[in-house]
Length: 150
Image (cartoon, rainbow, N blue to C red; front, side, top):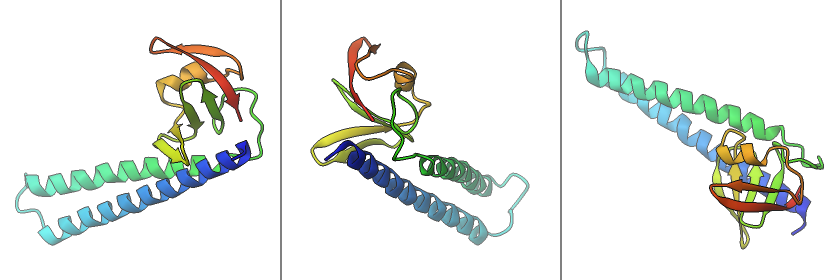
């Protein structure tokens, strides 16, 4: 597979995984709300079970909000952009691992190759950001060299 095809496939997989995540979170929120509604009105001022249900709904709401923001972020990735430096939207091939700088999905298998979809908020990105093809960096005591960047 050629570099543009790899990036397109990685982006498609990230989109699919993120859409699935959004659907799961929406269903979980609906289930939590339905449970709270079925439980009925508060039994007393300190109804801990109802508070627990509402807390779960609120937590899921925050997760959904974050997932929606990530989904919008990956929509901004320009597949035609040529990267000279590591930045959001680039694919970085090192002598040890392959990264897609996008959102924090984690391990993605593409054929026989394993890529890691990472967000710009993870520690390794701080070591990668701004580097060019051929440059090296040390992360967790391991020397890495950027073999390809697109």
